[in-house]
Image 1: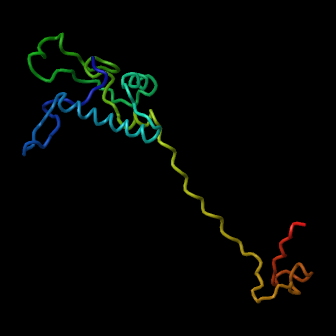
Image 2: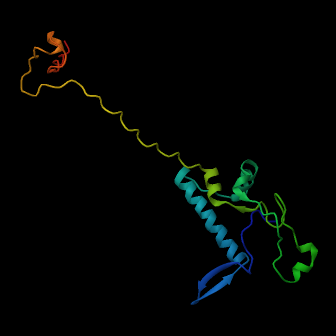
Image 3: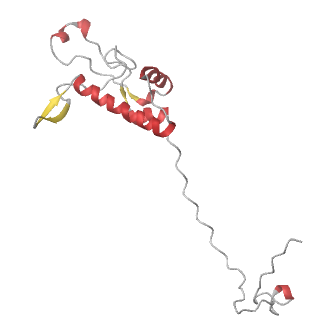
Length: 172
């Protein structure tokens, strides 16, 4: 009984360059490496995000199916027979149906969705907010004098003159 499905039709299969020419492969010769590569990507994401690998896959596959069924493409048409004498024996042909079936299991895995379900990516770091526009402040005396000017608010003058910062207290 299958747990998951992968494209395996030998008529459409996987085109592979080998031995100096292009060859069409199908069946488990194409589906198994595709599936292994997908789960290698899931493991890579898990190690990067949470520091561990998936391990024995079946319990996780069925837990995910129960809690997040949208991580699989449910295959609902076709059957497990490509060609040959086994297709004439009705006991060897299983139809794809909604949900779990004997032809495609739970369906084809969405590799990225499974990785994100098992170890959600960190939320993006928000971009820094720009500072509010600066408001013009009082002008500083740059003429070298440290004494308040006669128009400084501290000297009882009118606002708009030169402002000199007060000395820093010594902590007594």
